Image (cartoon, rainbow, N blue to C red):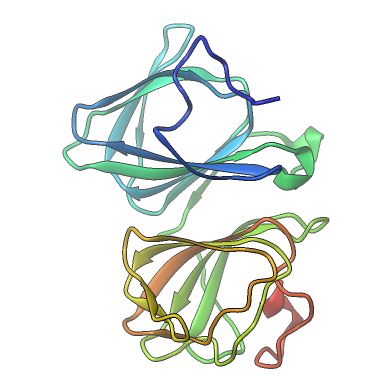
Length: 234
């Protein structure tokens, strides 16, 4: 099943990634620009990278507005049909993550509901690696999949080469974050995919950096030596 209703526009403008469990879209709307009516056949999460005020016209004729500043994060169930118009004064730029399998969501059927997280009010948890903190936004204990914001102080980073037990996705929101071996530097607006099992690192934050980090399964095959707390590797 391709999870696409041909009667409507796609749920996003550009597909950035897809595997058997998730699909990641980009949406970019200048002030006054509209994304056509689309049908969400899958539950999904939206993260606003840039934004202000949006308006949605729903299939039943309802009009709703939402304030979606940078860091706005919302989960919605499948089934909705609506358009999206940027009615603010700033560019709207977001990532939309569709969950193609129930185990990818990690939310029991009885608990399905919208979830709004204001990351501006969220609490950062310091990890045992100096200069690194995490704000967990969503997680699935059964599969190990997760979505988090991670923050690196300038000069901090992951000290050694390593590999992950699942696909890792990073989206840079602020700063500059370098993968020392390859010389690759993530800057605001850069999207990074590190395939399962690929060896990469070490890393270093060239500036204070904030990144959206997504795993579609467990983080590591085993706890890395640089973490003292088991939670840091999950």
